[in-house]
Image 1 (cartoon, rainbow, N blue to C red):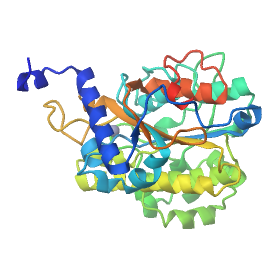
Image 2 (image 1 turned 90 degrees about the horizontal axis):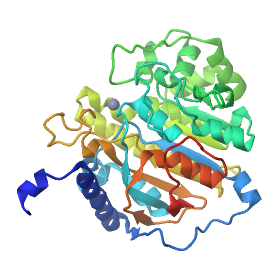
Image 3 (image 1 turned 45 degrees about the vertical axis):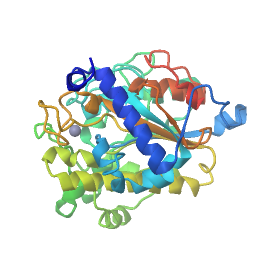
Length: 390
Ligand SMILES: [Zn+2]
């Protein structure tokens, strides 16, 4: 039966589908995107040994989840000018990426990185259970340790670089850099001026970060990033948030290490948990700007320009206003369609520009897609390669 009762009775799957359709319509009107299908002509990328060997991939998780009314919907578009007018027109955009896993930031990011919905405790320092994209990449393609890096927002992400799987593991994983640890190490404890950059997470005060002035962090800073403690401290003074600090470190990595696979997890938007709507909006605007700045920096680096594919996707969404079990934008605890239905854009080498795809895909499809793109076999991942990107 049609009518209001039918709307109320819609299944999560149907609600997710409607969210995807809205995004498509918003993008077609705001960014002039064409509607794509899996049957479109083959990828414009020239394939071949050399091309695949040189290809580099950057993945950005669009920190902590933002809802359509603050982003893609007409009333939210002013918060994402860079995505909308610079990046999306160059992208293949997927309007319906569903996360069927646990909606905690560490476990969801680990799931994105393994292609399996991980079930580890979100608030513990544990490695992912299944091999990560970094391990597949390095083992199958025989890549050096310095070829895969993760820049992560908080203490809880320090084990994300390598899984507990015995055939793989941290020795084959990514190097993880925690910019806040670098800063804490550089300050050797005197962190009062930098409190706004060191806030560790916005959800669990019980999960206290242990920020120390470790020798390891100082070595990363000086040996790998080639930054003196004084230069780093001086630059950090000019930054306004943890994500700005992460992006600064990520750009240093691109310049100094030229990794083939770089994963950056953003987190400022999650300040929404504090309940301050204006800070949540500031976080979205900053994330929008930082994504565009990174893409611009990529184009200026000879190692990356023209052969880099970048993916931007949230780990998950946030609760809808009308869900009685939640508190609107503040949290992501209801597991409703809004909190599970996200999006993904891919742009750069090998990617069709200005196309929007409605088809429902899963968060776990990212890793198999990277495998098909770069030539490694993510044999334990559960997702499927996204044919529209290959
Ligand atoms: Zn959160």
